[in-house]
Image (cartoon, rainbow, N blue to C red; front, side, top):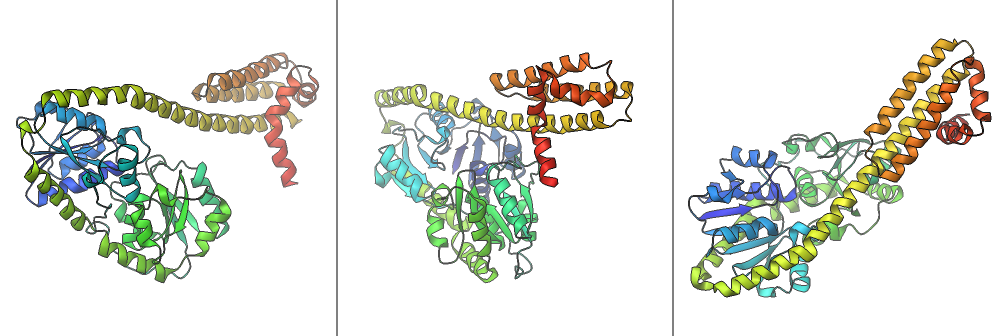
Length: 464
């Protein structure tokens, strides 16, 4: 069977990209002819090619139409349907919230596959898709790649891993997990697209950790290896996965529906206290028995076969019906999808700006502390003080210039630096030992000076 698999992006390694790669590779091993399509190619596309799977960014390059379209994400799925009239499709729903996951309602999409009960409910309740057209095929683990750890877990956890593409070091749940583990004497490392550490083969290192913070496929991979898993991500905090709860959590795809608490240090510590090597081994056994790739692909193949067997060919959908459906789809894209995508992009920009502003403020505090130390040193000559101030101010300006914070915050920070620079110009002829007193008494600079020194003074007070 010639199968075209679509995905919004193939330039990153996220959940749907890895799902597509694993399914396509398994289909090829079973004698099918999978082809992957996305307008954005990169790392995930390279992975597919390494599995001998053709990848295209332009559907016009395909010399022969597919027998079936395996659609992931609505834009490339509809593009494939338009390019290959008369070809049926199966749409796979991986997400609950992302705008890319909106299921298109077109007659040539004759079956929908959800990875868990929550996605099925979305398809039926929010999108009006008949229940008989929706099938749940749970997520899976490639058991050949994620093999059992060579040694059992230690009685006391020593090493933990935050395993997530959403984790930002020092921010959100990552910071809370680091704090909770540090208080318990557990060493923590990170792995993910935004952590500065990303591996092509996470299976090579997972066995080196006792506890893993993750959700979804990443959580399942860690469980298959034999790690104890705490469900956690930027959406919230779930439980430590136990044998008693693993089936229920698997039905929720170990995902957002299981993350029922806002992350807090004390709640994370409660879950760390539940660490039990024997229970983690029992969870591992269940995952390896029930969540393997082979069983999932068996079910996917059956869906494909049922669709092909029941398809009546190009005459199955009248052109006027398909045109009306496409018009309705374009209306949804214009009225719902584009505004949501713009809101999401704005939210990402604001979150990133907030992190950059926090980093700039921290650098301002550190540089100002250095300036204060130079001013307080009575042995510092006037020329040395001037040079020190010039160097520190230059660093401060560079830090602010590097920030892409919101205009209002950037203007406020820049104004503070300009005031500081003006004051420093006036102080060049003064002796270094008198500069600190002069600044504190200045009618204009005093407020900015206290603002900049606030974090440093508070830190010194705590240390005394």
